[in-house]
Image 1 (cartoon, one colour):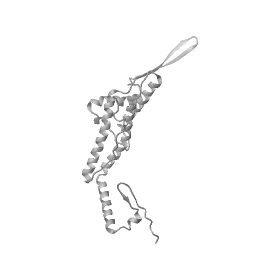
Image 2: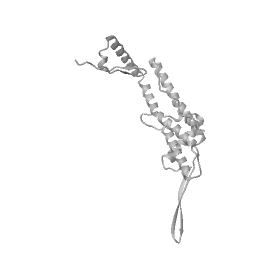
Image 3: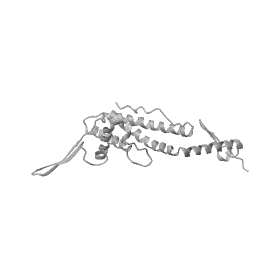
Amino acid sequence: MEPIEPNLWEDENYVYVPEEMFRLLPPEFREAVADRKQEGEDLLKVVDKDLHGLIRLANAIPTSSSLSYIFHRLRKTAAELTADSLMEQEVLTTAFIVTYSRLFASGKGALRLEQSDIPEHLRAVHDDIIELRNERYAHNEKHLTTRSGINVDFDDDGFHINMQMTLGMYIGGRNEWAELVQFIDAHMHSRLTKILQRLKKKTGYEWSFPENPPPAWVGDYS
């Protein structure tokens, strides 16, 4: 029988033992580990539905984080009466509208927010964003903020076509959007906290989730 070379490693929390070495541990150690493994598997079955909810929430967090950053950029980007500046405002507004709406769209694998989740005094603002998404930023429908057409002049040289276009926009974003973004940030954190509390209640164990200080731009919407 060839000797087994040790292949142990550890981090701040655990020591990792390869399976071939685990079989050589004293029986009482192996039994204790097997019992803990079985307990963990049994508890995971109990909270399976909650874990699926946690996964759906985790899949939605990148969208809410993107929304926060986009709105920060929209608020901080200087606006000038130039074509480049106005197009930058339009691009950032498009990103904001579409990203916000994605949180409320049907999809597989990610948490979907409902209009009823929004505070009542902000629901008209929410509805306005969804309408902008449906009629302007995601589809070429007729929205009251856009108007385009052509003007045709005729003279001895022939017909002359001139394009006409009018775009309405909130420079720096609508002020009420700031409260909406702040609410969504807090709402996502609240949902996470509630899931962790349910997991603890059902299993009797603490459930930790990595939390780092938020980036400096979170909440910087002035």
